[in-house]
Image 1 (cartoon, rainbow, N blue to C red):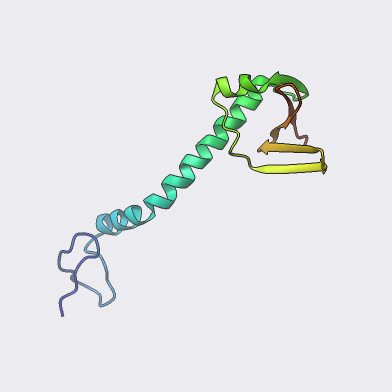
Image 2: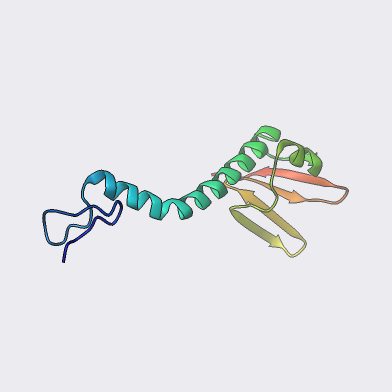
Length: 116
């Protein structure tokens, strides 16, 4: 039985366990196979990095109150965080890496920064 390349379908010549005709076909096959997962991870990580940049821009040292609309105007996505800290039941800090926020009353957000 003739072996065929898993990418292009051309006949494979060489070792009995060889699956691809050359390195280009092997790389192409693996890139295509991993692209869906990699694309999703890349999208989520880009959103998290953008959120972090926005928090850092609005309050580099933390401790500043802003309107939540200011975050939205910058492109902040409240659906993506890296961590959550709940020191009390009434208080829930949400973080994008070392920068975070606490939702307050009156449409305000307290921006914070973790030390260390």
